Image (cartoon, rainbow, N blue to C red):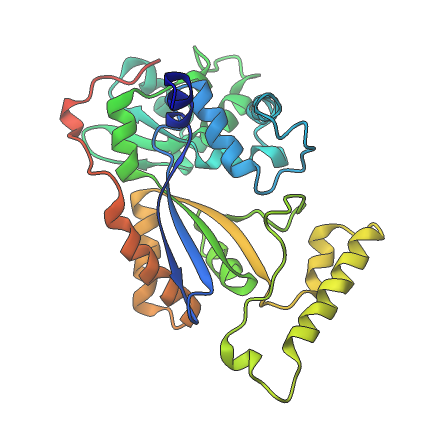
Length: 308
């Protein structure tokens, strides 16, 4: 691999590991490394594209490298638009003791940054580019706004290495019911495949256990096929994907991305103690298997001030 191509690969999120779970391994959970997503604009665009290509209502032209860069720029300028969802998975490490970054914690006590982040140790704070973009957007017309463009805060090598331990990203492929249950637990989990499913690599497919398939009373594959046909007919007649999907069985395959700070990840793991849903229990066990694959954290005390 040439140095140029190698550098491009290094700028992209990396698949760390994957596990199958539930009913003979019908579900799939992947652990991704997005720790360098905030190292440069190129890294940001690549991380954004990895997420956005799962759901974005984009043409083939827009799915090119330049097209995704334009979509990223639009999302950063309008962080409340549908295209901006992928900004939630670009982690940003802030230094609460830095003169430049302290402003982010003092200017607005109800800020998106404080509502969408978490204090670590030694005065470090992890949040997302989405929070920075929304905060900057909201404060842009305020007379006493921020003294610099806070969306231009990047992290260096050591800080990104730390983020590999303190911001965890998963890609989930499971039945619709499992994904909806998980996204309803006030976690940063977004089901991207159902808004506008233009990516043909993510088709609707059945997700049923062997017992369901083996039923002699009901022809389950035929039932699913009929439901899918109704869905496709509704969409082709102008009904939105979001409304048409209501005719699909809960066993339809769905896809989601999840990004977790340490406390959010701990909250997810603790669901194992009180949740009785077989699907979620199996999913949590699979996640526990993957977590040791993350990079070891570096020493917080050895890291210098973040780049402004």
